Length: 277
Image 1 (cartoon, rainbow, N blue to C red):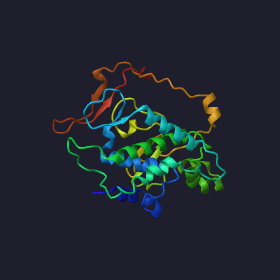
Image 2: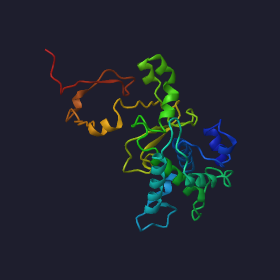
Image 3: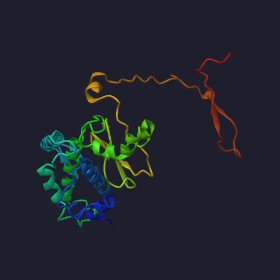
Image 4: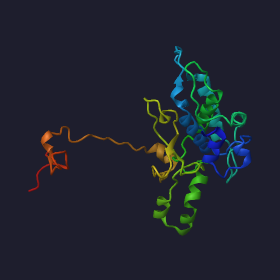
């Protein structure tokens, strides 16, 4: 059974001793998000995250109230908007360092542990959730703004060789599969633009970053828009999707053979399209 420390080493096998001992936090918000999201999912903690409705039930819950949201947004925004010199990354906020160091004393705790029906929520669940929320907010517009200070180092790592050669097609093919330095064979992190309004999954916990499986399960690449941030906001892209055909009659499905009386292959007779002359 993996412990919290072993899980970090699984995701970041080349991390320094300071990082894996939780005495020093990662400098990329996407790395903090990758670790926190992976642990929240593996532990099952995300099942218990609920908004503050003022009428909480007796169930085991991690209540996200207005104060927690405001603190995460404020710290994440300040981290994202910190002024830095070219080629440097913003300084990690002190509060993030403090949260990260809280994981040190409990780093030998198993990620998943069966809790009794009346058992309390492990305290580190709150820590992981707040780390995820801050890292997610710090990654706002990541992947959409080509000048994003946190996106550029990852993009450069994938495109540096092709930029020199000038092969634009290869630049697209080598677009980032993940915006985190976590092992991509275990998980990938990609920017996101939509959060589901229903459901209780990891997808509904974040607004700006998405946790994806490793590259062996899902292969995704992120290609930045050719338009700058200001142009994107002035000239939005809208799509109107109309389902067609409006109705499909049963006769449109035509069997093309069976196997020993069982269901076989079928074809579709597109009766809603005009016949060729």
